[in-house]
Amino acid sequence: MQQGDTVAVVSPSGPADAAMLKRGVERLEGLGYKVVVGAHALDRQEFGYLAGDDSARAADLQAAWCDPSVSAVFCARGGYGAGRLLGLLDWDAMRAAGPKVLLGSSDITALHNAFAVELGVPTLHGPMVACDAVAAEDGPEPRTWESLRAALSGEPVRVAGDRVLVPGRAAGVLSGGNLSLLASMCGTRWQPSFAGKLAFLEDIGEEPYRIDRMLTQLLHAGAFDGVRGIALGSWVQCGDPYAVLADRLGPLGVPILAGLPVGHGSPQMSVWLGTLGVIDTESCSLTGSNRDGEQAR
Image (cartoon, rainbow, N blue to C red; front, top):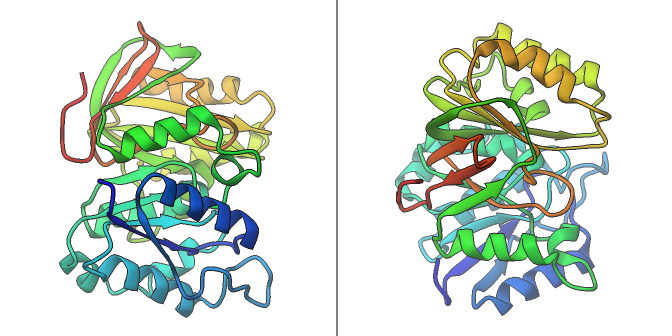
């Protein structure tokens, strides 16, 4: 992306805080982007946990993606609700609009996975516009902000982990996101498959037994059949998940790198999904290509 490009901000999941959304928009404008905000970005549906009715959230997302003047669609926040939109979107119209950037994480995993299946486009897993890492009163978290800026400008990605569960080196297209969301998509037309790919997983607020249950569900569904390597991001408020992660994923016999600061928590580094990545446990790093296809090394 370049200065002067237009970014549309939408809320496909939970409702955004108005003050934080305003600060986040101003900071994007400080990078030189033109920012437009979806008509329903600050709506709140009667349940309180959705940013307006499903139809309104879907309309904002589709309108932004199909607008030829928009270069990127950034999600305001996660929470819950993106999965409810998947059957409401006109995938043919969105496919015809061509590729652009989708940015988000957490609940936005539902969109990352569906966009990969339906549109075949790379998407950016990173901090959202109205989250603490971007929109805190005292400024964005510096490493988070620099990583996002670099990813948007097309620079190759490199993220360091802090532990190795299974040593080795593996390359493949990076896919995945939030474990809870990936497990929830089993049995749907958007069921995740890591065949020939690198799997990326992270989560927040899940006890180890729940992580075990979700990994077991994905294993039984065949999601990990043919996986080449696994990159594990942040596990905020998840106790000590690594024994369970090693127990469930180690028998796959592929390199597993852990402790990547990607997902929840601080910092939140940005990584491209749907582009080539490399796990190297010797350097304890995940490297990736930019969305224009420059290969990771």
